[in-house]
Length: 266
Image (cartoon, rainbow, N blue to C red; front, side, top):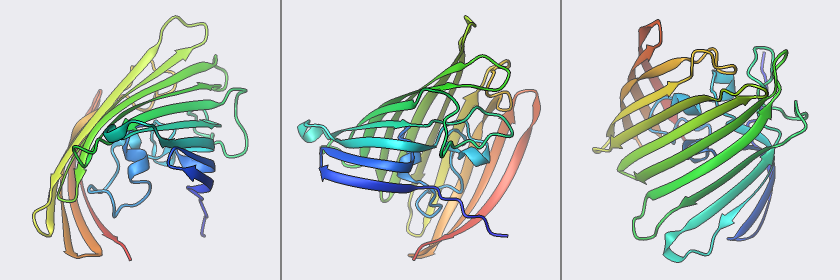
């Protein structure tokens, strides 16, 4: 059986460098990784995405996909290279086993999700990008009060053909209506790699910590640990990757994972 799952479908209009409009299904501009690599295993150095940016159908906690409209472009800033992105969409459905996470044709509440992002690519240091984003939506889980969701994200990355250093941090805030408590889930990852000819060793450390009584992320808990890997490209269009992950979890045994992957392009 074959299942067709459209990940991105956009109608775009580009007036100039300062104003671009798009409508359809897109990757949200939360942080850096989600729009830099999309679904391509070839483009990303490591085997998989950081847990923070895992896709919805793989247990990810962020609204990595969105159905709606966006505007984006450059800001008059000279050599600083400032850009903006504003997105308005259906948002992600409440995190329950029966929900389709990405709301394609309906929205479970009467408010739209809004994401505003800014980033800079200074000309004086090619490969450097810094930025932040603020995302806000409201969830409507079954048999529970409505929950306000705010996602704050910031990144500093330096990516060149032979060297990369990626750093991102997020804070997911859930505020149930009528409850004075706000549940904060922080997370971050850092990844560094260096190419030596056909070989590219890499190291990543990631961390996410959802509170014990978190109303939305009850299945997330605390996850942290390093990933060590090697990417080998025998020819220009083929890559072999070998990666070891050590995953620590709250009140559960740690996991040791060894993974291999072949990626190619044409």
